[in-house]
Length: 111
Length: 114
Image 1 (cartoon, rainbow over the protein chains, first blue to last red):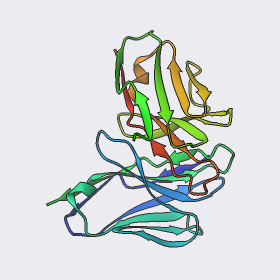
Image 2 (tube, rainbow over the protein chains, first blue to last red):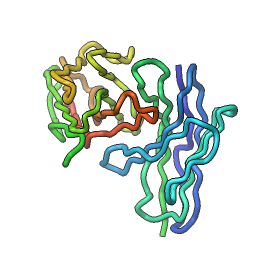
Image 3 (cartoon, one colour):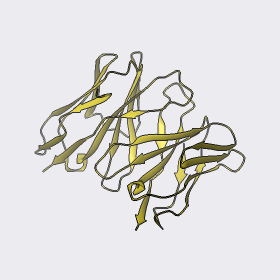
Image 4 (cartoon, helix red, strand yellow):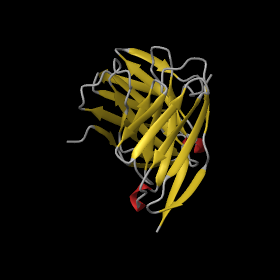
Protein backbone atom coordinates (compact mmCIF):
# COMPACT_ATOMS: atom_id res chain seq x y z
CA UNK A 1 0.00 0.00 0.00
CA UNK A 2 0.89 3.64 -0.14
CA UNK A 3 0.55 6.47 2.37
CA UNK A 4 1.57 10.09 2.27
CA UNK A 5 1.82 12.69 5.01
CA UNK A 6 1.73 16.43 4.62
CA UNK A 7 0.78 19.26 6.98
CA UNK A 8 -2.90 20.11 7.03
CA UNK A 9 -2.48 23.88 7.08
CA UNK A 10 0.17 26.50 6.35
CA UNK A 11 -0.19 30.27 6.62
CA UNK A 12 2.17 32.89 5.17
CA UNK A 13 2.13 36.51 4.05
CA UNK A 14 2.33 37.94 0.58
CA UNK A 15 5.85 38.03 -0.80
CA UNK A 16 7.10 35.35 1.57
CA UNK A 17 8.46 31.89 0.80
CA UNK A 18 6.70 28.76 2.01
CA UNK A 19 7.67 25.11 1.93
CA UNK A 20 5.13 22.28 2.00
CA UNK A 21 6.62 18.94 2.97
CA UNK A 22 5.51 15.49 1.98
CA UNK A 23 6.75 12.16 3.26
CA UNK A 24 5.62 8.92 1.71
CA UNK A 25 5.65 5.18 2.22
CA UNK A 26 5.17 3.10 -0.88
CA UNK A 27 5.62 -0.46 -2.02
CA UNK A 28 6.93 0.85 -5.34
CA UNK A 29 7.87 4.33 -6.49
CA UNK A 30 7.94 6.08 -9.85
CA UNK A 31 7.81 9.69 -8.84
CA UNK A 32 6.22 12.41 -6.74
CA UNK A 33 3.69 14.84 -8.18
CA UNK A 34 2.18 18.03 -6.85
CA UNK A 35 -1.29 19.37 -7.61
CA UNK A 36 -2.98 22.64 -6.73
CA UNK A 37 -6.68 22.97 -6.05
CA UNK A 38 -8.54 26.22 -5.43
CA UNK A 39 -11.79 26.12 -3.47
CA UNK A 40 -14.57 24.91 -5.73
CA UNK A 41 -12.12 24.08 -8.49
CA UNK A 42 -10.42 21.05 -9.95
CA UNK A 43 -6.92 19.84 -9.10
CA UNK A 44 -4.32 21.08 -11.55
CA UNK A 45 -0.88 19.63 -12.14
CA UNK A 46 2.09 21.63 -10.84
CA UNK A 47 5.18 19.45 -10.98
CA UNK A 48 6.68 15.99 -11.09
CA UNK A 49 9.95 14.65 -9.68
CA UNK A 50 11.25 11.23 -10.58
CA UNK A 51 14.89 11.82 -9.68
CA UNK A 52 16.54 13.39 -6.65
CA UNK A 53 16.95 17.11 -6.74
CA UNK A 54 15.15 20.34 -7.37
CA UNK A 55 12.86 21.12 -10.30
CA UNK A 56 12.05 24.78 -10.85
CA UNK A 57 9.05 26.16 -12.69
CA UNK A 58 8.72 29.89 -12.25
CA UNK A 59 7.88 30.77 -8.67
CA UNK A 60 7.28 27.11 -7.80
CA UNK A 61 9.97 24.51 -7.18
CA UNK A 62 9.70 20.89 -6.15
CA UNK A 63 12.32 18.75 -4.47
CA UNK A 64 12.69 15.01 -4.06
CA UNK A 65 14.94 12.79 -1.97
CA UNK A 66 14.23 9.17 -2.82
CA UNK A 67 16.51 7.85 -0.09
CA UNK A 68 14.53 9.79 2.52
CA UNK A 69 11.11 9.17 0.93
CA UNK A 70 10.62 12.89 1.18
CA UNK A 71 9.76 15.79 -1.03
CA UNK A 72 8.62 19.37 -0.79
CA UNK A 73 6.97 22.08 -2.79
CA UNK A 74 8.53 25.52 -2.49
CA UNK A 75 6.47 28.57 -3.33
CA UNK A 76 8.31 31.88 -3.65
CA UNK A 77 7.07 35.45 -3.84
CA UNK A 78 3.71 34.37 -2.53
CA UNK A 79 0.64 36.00 -4.01
CA UNK A 80 -2.94 36.03 -2.74
CA UNK A 81 -3.95 33.82 -5.65
CA UNK A 82 -1.66 31.07 -4.29
CA UNK A 83 -4.17 30.46 -1.48
CA UNK A 84 -5.33 26.94 -2.27
CA UNK A 85 -4.91 23.32 -1.28
CA UNK A 86 -1.75 21.57 -2.36
CA UNK A 87 -1.59 17.81 -2.75
CA UNK A 88 1.40 15.55 -3.13
CA UNK A 89 0.79 12.27 -4.94
CA UNK A 90 2.69 9.11 -5.80
CA UNK A 91 2.07 6.92 -8.80
CA UNK A 92 1.34 3.23 -8.61
CA UNK A 93 4.04 1.09 -10.19
CA UNK A 94 1.47 -1.18 -11.79
CA UNK A 95 -0.10 -0.80 -15.21
CA UNK A 96 -2.89 1.35 -13.88
CA UNK A 97 -0.64 4.34 -13.24
CA UNK A 98 -3.06 5.35 -10.55
CA UNK A 99 -2.19 8.22 -8.27
CA UNK A 100 -2.46 8.06 -4.49
CA UNK A 101 -2.91 11.54 -3.06
CA UNK A 102 -1.90 12.95 0.28
CA UNK A 103 -4.58 14.57 2.41
CA UNK A 104 -3.68 18.04 1.17
CA UNK A 105 -2.22 21.20 2.71
CA UNK A 106 -4.42 24.26 2.88
CA UNK A 107 -2.23 27.30 2.19
CA UNK A 108 -3.57 30.67 3.27
CA UNK A 109 -1.74 33.76 2.04
CA UNK A 110 -2.36 36.86 4.12
CA UNK A 111 -1.97 40.43 2.86
CA UNK B 1 -11.73 24.38 -25.69
CA UNK B 2 -12.62 22.33 -22.66
CA UNK B 3 -10.10 19.53 -22.13
CA UNK B 4 -12.05 17.36 -19.69
CA UNK B 5 -15.75 17.99 -19.24
CA UNK B 6 -18.29 16.48 -16.88
CA UNK B 7 -22.06 16.65 -16.67
CA UNK B 8 -23.91 17.48 -14.59
CA UNK B 9 -22.02 19.95 -12.41
CA UNK B 10 -24.49 19.53 -9.57
CA UNK B 11 -26.65 16.52 -8.80
CA UNK B 12 -29.15 16.36 -5.95
CA UNK B 13 -31.05 13.13 -5.49
CA UNK B 14 -32.68 10.91 -2.91
CA UNK B 15 -31.39 7.78 -1.29
CA UNK B 16 -32.05 4.65 -3.27
CA UNK B 17 -32.04 6.34 -6.67
CA UNK B 18 -29.74 5.44 -9.56
CA UNK B 19 -27.76 8.19 -11.29
CA UNK B 20 -25.05 8.65 -13.90
CA UNK B 21 -22.28 11.17 -14.38
CA UNK B 22 -20.80 11.66 -17.83
CA UNK B 23 -17.19 12.51 -18.67
CA UNK B 24 -15.53 13.36 -21.95
CA UNK B 25 -11.97 14.34 -22.81
CA UNK B 26 -10.74 15.84 -26.07
CA UNK B 27 -7.02 15.53 -25.32
CA UNK B 28 -6.52 12.25 -27.13
CA UNK B 29 -5.45 10.59 -23.88
CA UNK B 30 -5.64 6.84 -23.54
CA UNK B 31 -6.29 6.60 -19.80
CA UNK B 32 -9.21 7.97 -17.81
CA UNK B 33 -9.99 7.99 -14.10
CA UNK B 34 -12.71 8.64 -11.59
CA UNK B 35 -11.90 10.19 -8.20
CA UNK B 36 -14.04 10.86 -5.16
CA UNK B 37 -13.30 13.88 -2.98
CA UNK B 38 -15.00 13.94 0.40
CA UNK B 39 -15.88 16.88 2.61
CA UNK B 40 -12.38 16.86 4.10
CA UNK B 41 -10.92 17.22 0.60
CA UNK B 42 -9.43 13.75 0.65
CA UNK B 43 -9.02 12.75 -3.00
CA UNK B 44 -9.32 9.03 -3.62
CA UNK B 45 -8.96 7.06 -6.83
CA UNK B 46 -11.98 4.94 -7.67
CA UNK B 47 -11.22 3.57 -11.15
CA UNK B 48 -8.77 3.84 -13.96
CA UNK B 49 -9.50 2.70 -17.51
CA UNK B 50 -6.86 2.16 -20.16
CA UNK B 51 -7.37 0.41 -23.50
CA UNK B 52 -10.37 -1.49 -22.18
CA UNK B 53 -8.49 -2.53 -19.05
CA UNK B 54 -10.42 -1.53 -15.97
CA UNK B 55 -8.63 -1.23 -12.65
CA UNK B 56 -10.96 -0.92 -9.71
CA UNK B 57 -9.97 0.35 -6.30
CA UNK B 58 -10.83 -2.47 -3.96
CA UNK B 59 -12.65 -0.20 -1.53
CA UNK B 60 -15.21 0.96 -4.08
CA UNK B 61 -18.66 -0.62 -3.55
CA UNK B 62 -19.99 -2.57 -6.51
CA UNK B 63 -22.89 -0.11 -6.69
CA UNK B 64 -20.45 2.03 -8.65
CA UNK B 65 -19.80 0.98 -12.22
CA UNK B 66 -17.78 2.81 -14.86
CA UNK B 67 -18.76 2.52 -18.49
CA UNK B 68 -16.53 3.51 -21.38
CA UNK B 69 -18.21 3.60 -24.81
CA UNK B 70 -14.95 4.77 -26.39
CA UNK B 71 -11.52 6.12 -25.50
CA UNK B 72 -12.78 9.68 -25.04
CA UNK B 73 -15.61 8.88 -22.64
CA UNK B 74 -15.80 7.34 -19.19
CA UNK B 75 -19.15 7.53 -17.48
CA UNK B 76 -19.92 6.65 -13.88
CA UNK B 77 -23.14 4.92 -12.95
CA UNK B 78 -24.21 4.66 -9.32
CA UNK B 79 -26.97 2.36 -8.12
CA UNK B 80 -28.96 2.59 -4.91
CA UNK B 81 -27.43 5.85 -3.77
CA UNK B 82 -26.58 6.23 -0.09
CA UNK B 83 -26.01 9.28 2.09
CA UNK B 84 -22.30 8.48 2.25
CA UNK B 85 -22.01 8.83 -1.51
CA UNK B 86 -22.37 12.59 -1.15
CA UNK B 87 -19.09 14.03 -2.40
CA UNK B 88 -17.48 15.73 -5.37
CA UNK B 89 -16.62 13.31 -8.16
CA UNK B 90 -13.81 14.20 -10.52
CA UNK B 91 -13.04 12.65 -13.85
CA UNK B 92 -9.46 12.89 -15.11
CA UNK B 93 -7.38 11.75 -18.04
CA UNK B 94 -3.72 11.23 -18.86
CA UNK B 95 -1.47 9.82 -21.54
CA UNK B 96 -0.50 6.44 -20.19
CA UNK B 97 2.93 6.34 -21.80
CA UNK B 98 3.93 9.66 -20.29
CA UNK B 99 6.38 9.17 -17.44
CA UNK B 100 5.04 12.26 -15.73
CA UNK B 101 1.51 10.86 -15.87
CA UNK B 102 0.23 14.43 -15.71
CA UNK B 103 -3.47 14.12 -15.08
CA UNK B 104 -6.03 16.62 -16.32
CA UNK B 105 -9.11 16.92 -14.16
CA UNK B 106 -12.65 17.83 -15.10
CA UNK B 107 -14.53 20.52 -13.18
CA UNK B 108 -16.16 18.00 -10.85
CA UNK B 109 -19.71 16.91 -10.11
CA UNK B 110 -21.05 17.74 -6.68
CA UNK B 111 -23.38 14.92 -5.68
CA UNK B 112 -25.74 15.44 -2.77
CA UNK B 113 -27.81 12.51 -1.57
CA UNK B 114 -30.74 13.38 0.71
